[in-house]
Image (cartoon, rainbow, N blue to C red; front, side, top):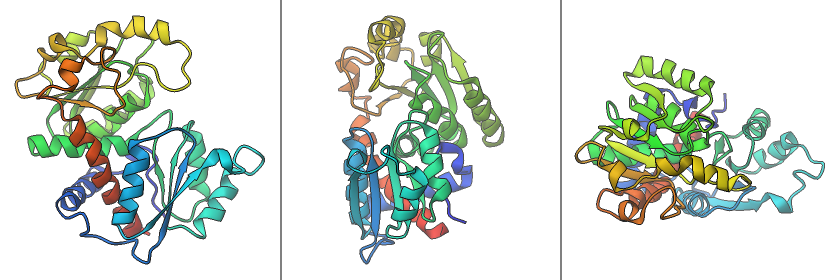
Length: 306
């Protein structure tokens, strides 16, 4: 059966660990695996603007021996009468895998349901699982393993990064805290799912409305932009989330030797200060690079399952 990666919990803890171990190998030797030699093609579908996703998947497919085929979906028949299922059937007969950066999670699930080749979520409104793999790789590089470490994400807790930190972090055995105000907290169903996963991995998942309490003793302090593409309530969001800025005062609550993560792009002076983002505890550039290695490992692993 074709395996897909549509949300973080599509990988078991053991599978996630294998992907991360392969990512470490591929960072050391970027041409150690060539499953796409031929070259075979991977279709990269984009509904939304992108820098890190576009670069990392394009470079990664090439380094795996393949040919990246970038498709701007605004120039296709998606949304103009052609169904998502038909798109999957057309591409799947010609490409080895498909990635898609789109909006609703239901869209990528519909694509995967009709696809005979692996489909990878390159970002939806609900989840950003490839980013979390890169983040876990970054944590592992710094601490040896993510298991048992406390990751505190503060800011907009109702977005895709918070959801993926909950699921992916719990799968890795981390203690995940989401610090967010009422109205900006994650879906209780996602929290409950993360808690069920954590019960089997030794981790935990919690939601707090006090940013200082969320950050207290954390090994990893993470955040994301407050206003995402298409959100019209920017002033209201900035007002509600202002106390959750990752600044020197909040970082002082974290554990000694803590690191800072941000999936980028960052708005210095808004969700995070320049002092912290550009400071010695920030690993955001390693984190951004690790998108390449983690995604290559994921692609290689998924292709092996076929």
